[in-house]
Structures are given as C-alpha cells and as structure tokens.
Image (cartoon, rainbow, N blue to C red; front, top):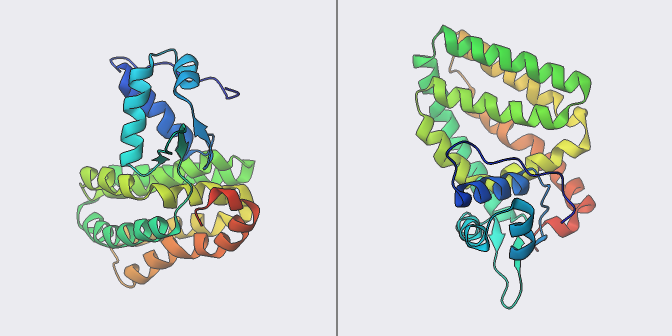
Length: 231
C-alpha cells in the first residue's frame, strides 16, 4: 500500500479504535479517495493489527456511509453522494442557526478569544498556502461555536451526518486560496456578530456561508474528478 506512514496508536486506544480512526481520517482527507478499494490483508499489514479490527472498523464505516461493501469484492471507499451532501448541508444549516443564537447568549471572553485566535491562524494559513491547515481551522472554528453555545454533543452528532459534504469541502481546497478567502471573511463577520450579540439576518448569512462556496465549485469539481462522485 503506497501511502504516507500511518500514525501510531494513541495511549489507551485498542486495535479497533485505532483502525477506525486511521481509516476515517484517511477517507475524510481524501488520502483514501472515493472509489479506492480497501483490502483487509493490506490494511492489516500496513497498520500492524490483525484483520479482525480492520473488519470491525470497516463495518462502522459502512454504517457511516463512508465505505461500500461490494459483493464478491473488497470494500470500497464510497463515492460522494450529492443527495447525502445536500442532506448534510440541510442539517448543518438548521443546527448552526440555532447554535449561533445560543452562542450569542452564552459565549464568554474565553470563547471569543479562542475564535479570534482561530481566525488569525486561518489568515496565516491562507497567506502561506497551507490549504489543508486552513481546512482544519475552518472545521475548528465551527466546532468552537458549538462549544460556545454549550452544545458539544450536537457538534459530534452533526459531524456524523455531514461526511459527504465535508469531502466536497476538502476537494474544494484543491482549487486554491481564491476559493477560501471569502469563507475566511465570513468567519470574521460571524465573530463580529457574536461579539456585538447581534442575531439580525444571521439565518440568511449562515445559509450563504454554508452553501454558496461549495455549490459554486461543484461543477468544476465534478468535471475534474468525475470518478469521485456517485452517478
């Protein structure tokens, strides 16, 4: 398997948890691209665990719609399903409208400081061309909003549903920084609204923030990477 070295097990992590974490992260970062075959024996050797935890991890990934089981063949990384993308966006939009209203009520100085530091790091990543780093910070910014609203479990629940949308977002990063600066500016606007405790027009703003970028990029992405998308 021609891949970058896999990370080591985390302290206290069992073999199944380790296999799931590694496979999930490789799929979500597109290191394991849509359509890639997952061969138990190869993964077992690469991760240095037995086949049983590999199979258990794949079962969990099938339940998450990230892996497809093919009859008489190895499992395959699921291609991006546009219906799943839209459903994920639908959930995230309605959740984040409510989350922002809660964050306006509950965010304290530490929450604001964390969000401000995150935005500064986003800017640095865009200036230096660290697009993968920007993607991680983009996700972290939204996670901080959920935590500012005191709804961490809601974040975890939403993340389980938006995996196909997040892979489109990860693919969009490959189009370059010009695709990402508008989202950064929108993050700045969200922070300003949070600091001033302003909820006015935020529902419409969040809808634009969560949908405009990826929908605008989708035709080009599908043209460049047709094999990544389910037909």
